[in-house]
Amino acid sequence: MAKQDAKIIDSDPMTFYCAPSPTPGPDDLLVWEPLMHEALQLAAAAQLRGDVPVGAVVIDGSGRILGRGENRTIFENDPTAHAEILALRQAGAQVGNHRLTDAVLVVTLEPCIMCLGAVIQARLAGVVYAAADPKAGCLVSRMDGTALPWSNHHFWSLGGVLEQECSAKLSGFFKQRRQEKKISKNLAER
Ligand SMILES: [Zn+2]
Image 1 (tube, helix red, strand yellow):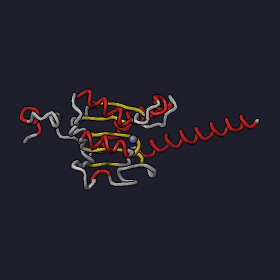
Image 2 (spheres, rainbow, N blue to C red):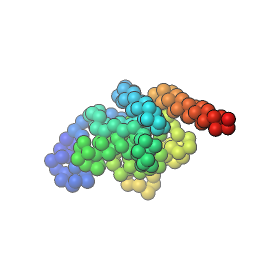
Image 3 (cartoon, rainbow, N blue to C red):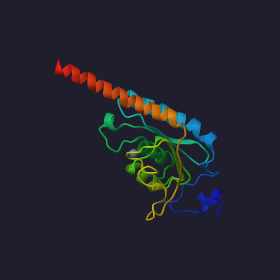
Image 4 (cartoon, protein in one colour):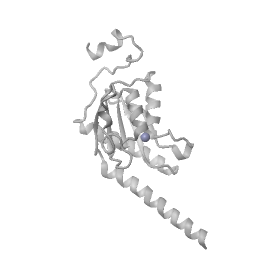
């Protein structure tokens, strides 16, 4: 079945959404850098509110941005408010479907296990990330979430896009937080 015919032929609401043009793949580096810049700006917005600076965008098969999200777990007191989850929620609302076949998530940090679950639920085509997360990343660092043997959905992933910029933002945030803790500890001991 041709991709452009999918909307007409396939009436199953689970797979109804299908972008008409081919989704950019892991080799399309020129596509991902500007999108990662967008995600990086969202990460900066998270940092301004005191959250860990992680930002994410979701694009459809033609490269159109369907959803944006920045980490809001601390600000909203919501353990599920990761940038990826918020971007996927907005994308689902935008297309009117919880399945986002052909869509790609672009995120500044390798997704955690919760966000990996959301990627599989959304049936994304791929995930592009900047920095790997050796502690909790579930695409390459802790496990290969792209091809779980028991999952019926596999996707591609591409890491290292604007890695230095995104890593610097994260390490700057944690350094600042350590300094703030040190200052408040010193003040408390006076
Ligand atoms: Zn996550």
